[in-house]
Image 1 (cartoon, rainbow, N blue to C red):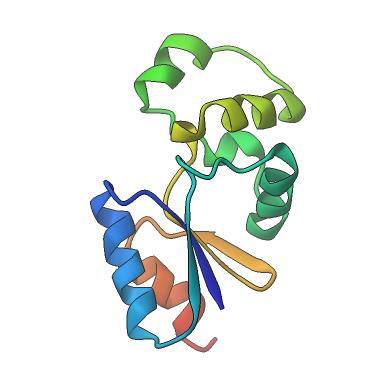
Image 2: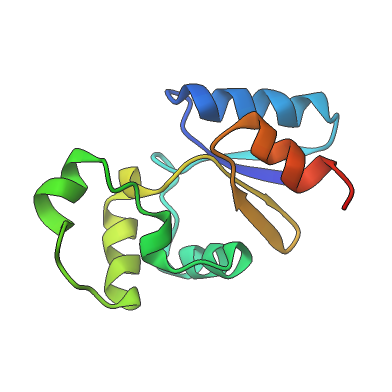
Length: 117
């Protein structure tokens, strides 16, 4: 079962979702702008990503540039900022069991989940 943190307005997110559909596996779509992840959910997601909160922040977003760029926040503060501003979450994020990957391309999804290593 796949989960995808998805923004339907994002072309890349739609392409990755299409790749998931091609696998014929069960999947769940989490439209994170509508179903905003809690701080606890973000912590679990970050553990699966093996990343810090700042590593999943879209630093080219206007809100980041205006409110957060150049400021130092703790991981806990970033978690709250991300929760309150979910548009900052890098997308799409695909989760399968205990593994999560930011799939900035369909190829990244295929490399991370479909190609045997």
